[in-house]
Amino acid sequence: MRPRQYPEAQLLSGPRAGLSRRAARAGGTAGVVLELALLCLSALLYALCFPSFLSDWGWFPLAYIALVPLFIVVHRSSWPRIFLYGLFFGFLSYGLYNFWLGKFHPLALFIVPPIYAGYFLLLMPLLKAADALFPRYGFILQTLLWVAYEYFKTLGFLGYPYGIIGYSQYLFLPLIRLAGLTGVWGVSLLVVFPSTLLGNALKQGRRIFFPFLKQMAAPALCYLLAFASSLVYGALAAEELSGARPWKVALVQQNVDPWKGGAKAYENSLNISTRLSVQASLQDPEIIIWSETAFVPSVDWHTRYRTDRELYTLVKRLREFLSTRPEPYLIGNNDGQLALTDRGEEVRIDYNATLLLQRGRILGTYRKLHLVPFTENFPYQDVLPGIDRWLRHADTHFWEKGREYTVFEAGGVKFSTPICFEDTFGYLCRGFIRHGAEVLVNMTNDSWSNSVACAMQHLSAAVFRAVENKRSLVRATNGGITCVIDPNGRIVSRLAPFSEGALIATVPVFTGTATPYTRWGDWLGQGLLILGPLGLLAGAARSVLRRKED
Image 1 (cartoon, rainbow, N blue to C red):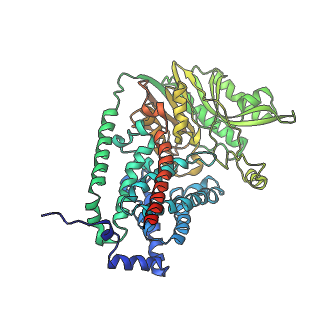
Image 2: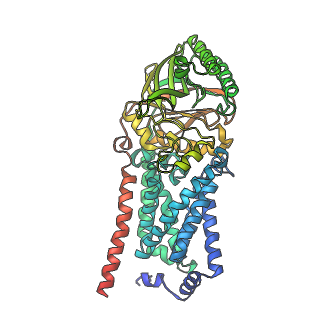
Image 3: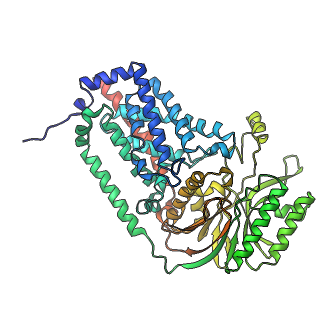
């Protein structure tokens, strides 16, 4: 007896399904309320799969179903409403996920969620177009488009890698080691696919759910094989680190935001950092590391120019302290330099920087390459001078952009120091490794947030940088999360967030063969950014040809 067939026409039609679609698309209040409720549910599930206001570590299994309600709405919605729904979902999802932005800066809530509302204003119609052009297998194209969007949003001035759904899996070590081959994008593909498949299975209600899944047995089986293969790859990719050279570090977490309070806050931060460093030195670390702008007054500037007596006094105190210490010190600092304007005038410019010092002498400087948009950098002052003035008067700290992938060396170990959210960008950390870094040392100020979830979201992205490049990553923060991540993605030691202390840790310096990601970079993200739109164009061309044939 032949198995019962469920042809595409039957799956996409039927009395109850037709009535449901006509009711929803008629613009009735009940249909709109249902669709808005589904979008709210999806935005909430999306936020909760990451570290959130309900769980500091996040509930990562939710990520596999978080977008199911969204994809149901993509199918149900009318074309006019889908644009408005994109605005709504983009704003709500990032408002819930980045709830801590209001503590970062009052402007942030008026910048980040609206930007993502704009992204989803464009993405949701593309997802709907995939559904309309490929009624049977559109969910596959929807998966590709979603991950292409995730890659796209990391690019350019507005680049912001927070919220990539693959990051939610940072505790699922066998899976995330796939990132050594594909970057985080391969993990995102595996996480998003169940939502697109189930969303399409439920798009006409429960009536066709099981028939649809039977029809999609082949894609589902391929997914399960890909998922299982990824876990096997992750298990085999784990490195034996017993033979790695140990690097003993002291990570100072002073639990003070030195930007708040001027010279008094700078002095307080200095007092705590020096006291903790002296205590840490009793355990003979090979290097002592302070966090991003742990010492704000520019060491180089005030040593040479002494334009502010109070700040110069603090710099003098720091250098005198360091001159008595045998260990090298790595310190986050505001680096002031003289520069010439187009008119030939000398002006001071400042960089968010890291200094490597030995006995009080500066051995090297790294200047931050990727600045935080709007709060650290706004390159459109000539085009939008009003916004530039508004930002500058809103307690922002604008910096100049660095130009070099600096690699330091201390105690025979080569390392680079991505600053702040630079460790959320795969291309940057890959660049440091390709320039010779054996360890990544992230210097971060997360104390402003007073939110463990915020600090954990940052940590979750950093885990991927270690796995992608198979190199240890050290995080020195002034509030959280100060820790060591080994090349296999394990968080091997950490300090309690928002506490004062010094973490003495042994970092495995693994220098094995470069991973495919280190060699090839974001090849998968770039490929999907091309393949997704090409799939839509192919579907549109096929639709036009069929109409002509009819």
